[in-house]
Image 1: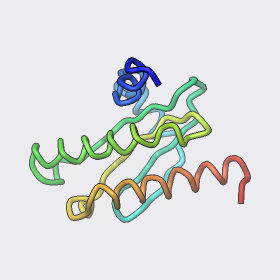
Image 2: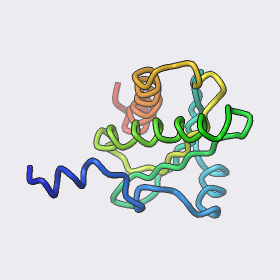
Image 3: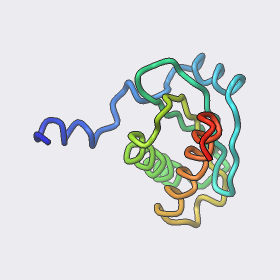
Image 4: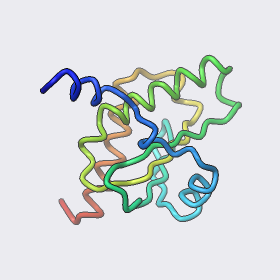
Length: 126
């Protein structure tokens, strides 16, 4: 792999972000919800050649520094695992209060459990 390709795979480009309010509203109203102890995922097919991530975090969860750290961990989880997604989805993550007390590995594991479980159901894989 060239340095340029390697560098590109380690970024979180704008095309992989859900940033428009109308996109958030549409995904929130039409998407399928998957819940865990740490967060709720709202997943919707996006008909794009790539998956996108949005994060909605309440001000009830910690202070600004804590919320930003959680957002960084969730983006990192998505970035490291987006190649495992066969289907291309828009994914909104809504963290719960319990996410404050767990490690990155547990966050990543729960994210993968929810996403890959949904993927298996969609593709009818057992």
